[in-house]
Image (tube, rainbow, N blue to C red; front, top):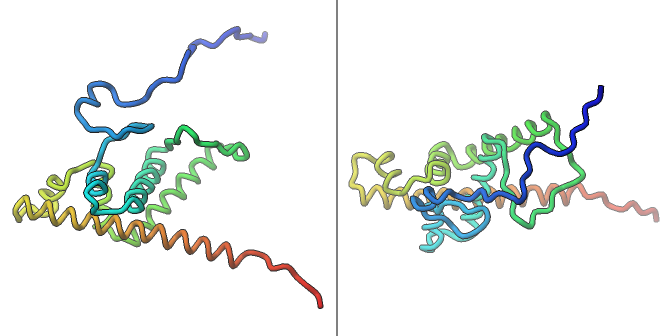
Length: 186
């Protein structure tokens, strides 16, 4: 016997807003944009002029890579055009996530474990400079520890940007060296 289903069980009349709940929005400060995200110390350093937009973009790239690698999802912008040529199965999806973990490993090798610790504090745990300072430098004054952590975080973001820049240039030069040259006789 074949069973025919006339209509779906759950009807979703419109797309759901997955932004912060009103309670969560009241507790934090969110950036305007889609998806809304909580402001971090990276945003504070950018608005203060301590880092450039390129360095903030590198931090965002690292965070998106980490979320994809360990949580298994990506957030796309509203104008994202999906690739219709590739359809992932379970294995290829896990291999793609494994590749993302390899990228994170390369970053850790480039900036070191201490740099990665500061990235995780800034971006994943969303700690303030004061909170990181209390943890990393418990024996010095809170003001001095906050200033030290702020300078270290700016340096780590500069190193992260340079890593991504060097990676992009290496891929570009590799692509140029692999370009076939037309063969001519005579």
